[in-house]
Length: 425
Image (cartoon, rainbow, N blue to C red; front, side, top):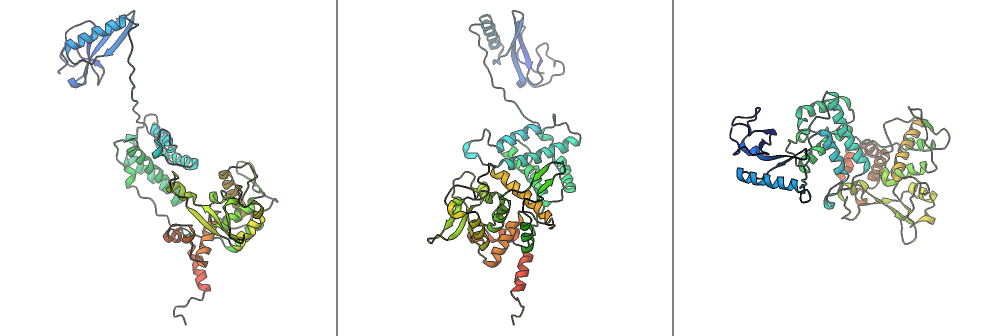
């Protein structure tokens, strides 16, 4: 084994920085060290006032190393002139759990340059990290120690096991895909942001095809549901025994506003009186809504004009706005729903969703639709009666509209009513 040139000199040693062993005692490897000379360093080890001081020397020649050692001794004997140079030691992270925490910070734009920052909702971040924690818990259940499991050990076989686990335990295609997308995005972060040299395993994992088969809410079912929304018998007892009052003075108005505008629930709760537009005669012309889903995905930095939706004024929406006393409030910055209450918009949206489910069950209606289906119902009716849905800003393309929102069965029924004939006689 070749080592740095060495002669006995008090305090001077040659060490291997690979295995941290002294190698100057003989020309043969010391205690099994056989690392190359490039891994070796001259090291000063000095005892002063009963304390042991050490320093890795920069010199690579023996004479220079002796000189540097003597300078080190002189510094130690003159503490007023001695200053230890602080070096920033880079911590090398490898654990899967560490990278999940880093990803969470990155999603929240912690230590991310302004031009790279994206606005993400707390709900999205919580769900995304939740999917990754779910992965780590699965691996822990398989006997892997999370305090030692590195990201490099998460190979295609472990992810393959998790993939099979998800397939066997998750029924909903969308929920299954949400889990996979979180893992795909996580690996993209590791490779693109943390610059880890790893294989992008999830890239080869295919998502399950989601066939939405949109359904709309029947007119009679919706009217029945509305008739059940009142203060009487509105207490729901949860499985935990906790009691929830599902009625609020604005509950019916909020659900109707969802139905008559075709906007998403969070968009409905954000509508204000200032969003009402009247014509030159003071008559209702439209409501201006904001496509919040599009804004988060494509205009998160607010560099573009907002994507707005021009909501037509149906007879039902007009009656609702009159009940909401729009004429005395128009132009103000007050919310159409629950402006007087001290409630966050996200909380209000969740509250309306739970209330809708409660009253739907109270009306003995099937569990095959939720408050989200009111949007599909509205867009189906608008499509059938006008064919101008995209023009109003609800969706950018007709393909998205037809695939995800239009109830095909309702279309067939309408065609049958029109007297469709093969020969058109």
